[in-house]
Structures are given as C-alpha cells and as structure tokens.
Image (cartoon, rainbow, N blue to C red; front, side):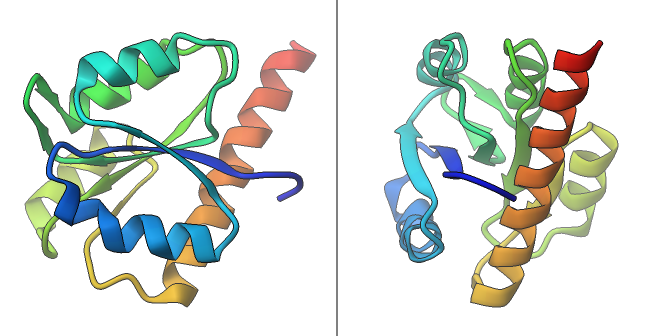
Amino acid sequence: MRGTVTALLIFHRTELYNDLEAALEKLAVRVGRARTLAEAYHILSTANLPLLVFTESELPDGNWADVVSLSARAASPVSVIVMGQEIDTKLYVSAIEGEAFDFMAPPFEARDLAHVVRCAADNALMRRQAATNS
C-alpha cells in the first residue's frame, strides 16, 4: 500500500463512527464523512474518490447494499467495509455475499483495523490499476 489512504465514513449516528474515525486517523488515513446515501452519492460521483468506504448497515435513505451498489458504479474501484454495532453473523454473511470487502464491529483493535485498511486499500488500488491497464 503506497501513498495516502483515504476513506469515506457513511454514518448518520455520529456516536458510531467517533471511535472508528479516531482509530483511522491514528493509522494516517484521511477521513471524509457523509450522513446519508445521497451525500455519499455526491462524494462518490467526483473524480477524487476515496479508496475505502466504511458504512453503517442502515442509513436514513438506504442501507449497506445501496452503498455497495453505488460504489460499484463509481469511476474508480472502491472497497466497502460494512460496520455493525456488534458482531452479527447474518449481517456479516450478507455483506460478504453482497460484494462488500469486509464487515467489522467495535471494539476496533488497532492491529485488526490496520490489517483491514491495508488489505482493502491494496484491493482497491489493484482493481484501479487493472482497470487502467485494460
């Protein structure tokens, strides 16, 4: 993983992303925010796309599957990580089967979060390079 890693956090309940945002900033990840799917749409429609998207499972105007779908239509590949409030096996399986990159729930262990960020960023970068070469 080279360069600056950027992430978009899509959470309408700010208390859910405060710990995540702090943990990502400790990893030197540049963080942007959206509170709704509509706000995320505007960000993901720009040329300056984040590598990563962290989204809570339910949003006021959509859900994690809508975020995955929106990200799939972005100009460049983005890795989506679905966030649960707690470990939820059904949500985990649904997210992975629904083409999210990963699923996480608090508490965020620094080592685990760093691993997910590194793998998800590498995945997005690799897909972007493949798209450029084709």
